[in-house]
Image (cartoon, rainbow, N blue to C red; front, side, top):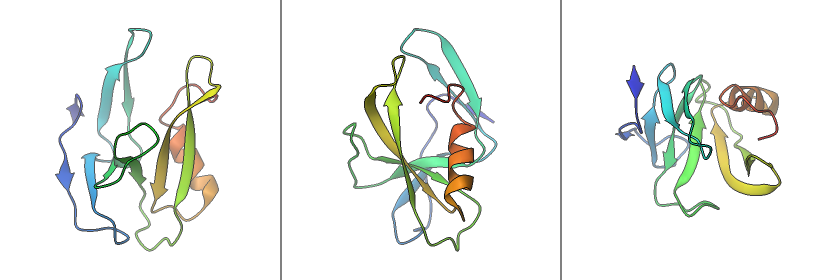
Length: 116
Protein backbone atom coordinates (compact mmCIF):
# COMPACT_ATOMS: atom_id res chain seq x y z
CA UNK A 1 0.00 0.00 0.00
CA UNK A 2 1.14 3.55 -0.62
CA UNK A 3 0.15 6.44 1.61
CA UNK A 4 0.99 10.13 1.40
CA UNK A 5 1.25 11.26 4.99
CA UNK A 6 -0.51 8.15 6.21
CA UNK A 7 -3.55 7.74 8.35
CA UNK A 8 -3.26 7.27 12.08
CA UNK A 9 -4.25 3.81 13.23
CA UNK A 10 -4.67 3.52 17.01
CA UNK A 11 -3.19 0.38 18.48
CA UNK A 12 -3.67 -1.24 21.82
CA UNK A 13 -1.05 0.12 24.18
CA UNK A 14 2.37 -1.31 23.48
CA UNK A 15 4.97 -1.30 26.21
CA UNK A 16 2.46 0.69 28.29
CA UNK A 17 2.59 3.58 25.80
CA UNK A 18 -0.24 5.07 23.71
CA UNK A 19 1.22 4.40 20.26
CA UNK A 20 -0.50 5.32 17.01
CA UNK A 21 0.77 3.73 13.80
CA UNK A 22 0.85 5.86 10.62
CA UNK A 23 2.50 3.27 8.37
CA UNK A 24 2.62 -0.49 8.70
CA UNK A 25 5.66 -2.61 7.89
CA UNK A 26 5.79 -2.99 4.09
CA UNK A 27 3.94 0.29 3.37
CA UNK A 28 5.62 2.97 1.26
CA UNK A 29 6.12 6.40 2.79
CA UNK A 30 6.42 9.38 0.42
CA UNK A 31 7.25 13.05 0.75
CA UNK A 32 9.23 15.99 -0.55
CA UNK A 33 12.70 16.78 0.79
CA UNK A 34 14.09 20.18 1.76
CA UNK A 35 15.70 20.26 -1.69
CA UNK A 36 12.26 20.00 -3.35
CA UNK A 37 12.86 16.45 -4.62
CA UNK A 38 10.20 13.80 -4.15
CA UNK A 39 11.17 10.66 -2.25
CA UNK A 40 9.61 7.34 -1.33
CA UNK A 41 10.75 4.59 0.98
CA UNK A 42 9.47 1.15 1.83
CA UNK A 43 9.15 0.66 5.58
CA UNK A 44 10.83 -2.31 7.21
CA UNK A 45 9.08 -1.68 10.55
CA UNK A 46 5.81 -0.08 11.58
CA UNK A 47 6.13 3.71 12.04
CA UNK A 48 4.07 6.12 14.10
CA UNK A 49 4.10 8.27 17.19
CA UNK A 50 3.69 8.15 20.94
CA UNK A 51 0.63 10.23 21.77
CA UNK A 52 0.73 12.99 24.41
CA UNK A 53 4.51 13.44 24.07
CA UNK A 54 6.69 16.17 22.62
CA UNK A 55 10.00 15.61 20.89
CA UNK A 56 12.88 17.93 20.07
CA UNK A 57 11.01 19.14 16.96
CA UNK A 58 7.86 20.03 18.93
CA UNK A 59 5.86 17.14 17.46
CA UNK A 60 4.90 13.87 19.13
CA UNK A 61 7.77 11.41 19.54
CA UNK A 62 8.35 9.30 16.41
CA UNK A 63 8.54 5.56 16.91
CA UNK A 64 9.44 2.50 14.88
CA UNK A 65 7.89 -0.72 16.19
CA UNK A 66 9.78 -3.92 15.53
CA UNK A 67 8.62 -7.53 15.60
CA UNK A 68 9.63 -8.43 19.17
CA UNK A 69 6.82 -7.25 21.41
CA UNK A 70 8.58 -8.90 24.37
CA UNK A 71 11.72 -6.76 23.96
CA UNK A 72 12.47 -4.81 27.13
CA UNK A 73 14.69 -1.98 25.86
CA UNK A 74 13.97 1.24 23.97
CA UNK A 75 16.65 2.61 21.65
CA UNK A 76 16.76 6.36 21.00
CA UNK A 77 18.34 7.63 17.79
CA UNK A 78 19.17 11.31 17.44
CA UNK A 79 18.72 12.27 13.80
CA UNK A 80 20.76 15.09 12.27
CA UNK A 81 19.39 17.70 9.86
CA UNK A 82 20.66 17.56 6.28
CA UNK A 83 22.30 18.42 4.10
CA UNK A 84 25.18 19.31 6.45
CA UNK A 85 24.19 16.79 9.17
CA UNK A 86 25.72 18.91 11.95
CA UNK A 87 22.60 20.07 13.83
CA UNK A 88 20.12 17.91 15.70
CA UNK A 89 16.82 17.49 13.84
CA UNK A 90 14.72 15.09 15.92
CA UNK A 91 14.78 11.75 17.65
CA UNK A 92 13.36 8.40 16.63
CA UNK A 93 12.57 5.77 19.22
CA UNK A 94 12.95 2.10 18.40
CA UNK A 95 10.63 -0.30 20.27
CA UNK A 96 10.33 -4.03 19.76
CA UNK A 97 13.94 -4.67 18.79
CA UNK A 98 16.07 -7.15 20.68
CA UNK A 99 19.42 -5.41 20.18
CA UNK A 100 20.82 -1.95 19.50
CA UNK A 101 22.41 -3.30 16.30
CA UNK A 102 19.05 -4.54 15.02
CA UNK A 103 17.37 -1.20 15.85
CA UNK A 104 20.15 0.76 14.12
CA UNK A 105 20.08 -1.49 11.03
CA UNK A 106 16.31 -1.09 10.62
CA UNK A 107 16.49 2.68 11.21
CA UNK A 108 19.26 3.15 8.64
CA UNK A 109 17.40 1.01 6.09
CA UNK A 110 14.87 3.87 5.84
CA UNK A 111 17.42 6.61 5.08
CA UNK A 112 19.65 6.63 2.00
CA UNK A 113 22.33 8.89 3.53
CA UNK A 114 24.22 7.19 6.40
CA UNK A 115 25.30 10.63 7.75
CA UNK A 116 21.76 11.23 9.01
